[in-house]
Length: 336
Image (cartoon, rainbow, N blue to C red; front, side):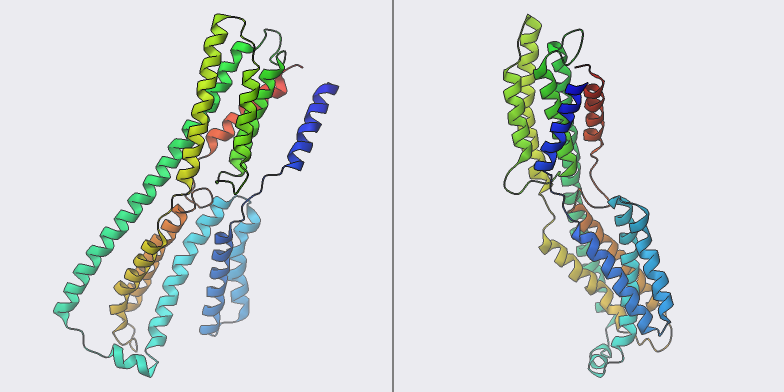
């Protein structure tokens, strides 16, 4: 018992000495600030009392206080932001017609035939570019999910083959086996806390190298042990390669240039509806709101795909969580 407590204390001290740096999701913070700023601007524009802004701000910030998980927060904010952008475009539609210089441009007649050709070409290009970007982003996303599952399965394979080197009385009778299991557990924890490619020193590679050293100390007593050891070494080598692929795939992003192009095309689609005079309430209010909201949803979706571990549409890391729980249960239940 004393030995087990000492091992746990050593493990806690080691983790404090080498903490895993967590990434701050600045995108989520900026999105919250953007929503609050938009709400404040709309309240000032319509001359509403400030208590209405306080109610809106409380509604926006309530998920931040209710949950620590980023998924629900991202989903809430990414649902509110497009609506705020749509409302902002409607306000811009009204205000831009009050500018004398803009009225000169907006009062220019737009031939109906050329307008139809303009929309036919632009909508086709918009659909093609959007489809290409979404397909490319989803391919990266699915590939990353597959690599995470392969990496977790490879760890589980190594973990299962360690059973050949355990004595019947206790899994801790062989200290090398327990050390390898502990390193595999730490690798799962590290992958969950920081799934991105580390900057500079890579703690994941260190854990795998230490695991390789411990595997080299395993004693083969039977022929089955030799076969199991060969599979463990082959699995560890595959794990190195899978980890490298996963980190590389995690860096894949939709090019910013394509996102800027899509944003420009979205504005080009909405702009013709600004030509009609808003003095009398007309259908353009609804069209501008719907188009601006829809295009914003698409852009935010693509930005979300560019943050595969932080966004609302995040990759599934449950394979690492389940494996970590299994190894923890094994280690805690073993008798030293």
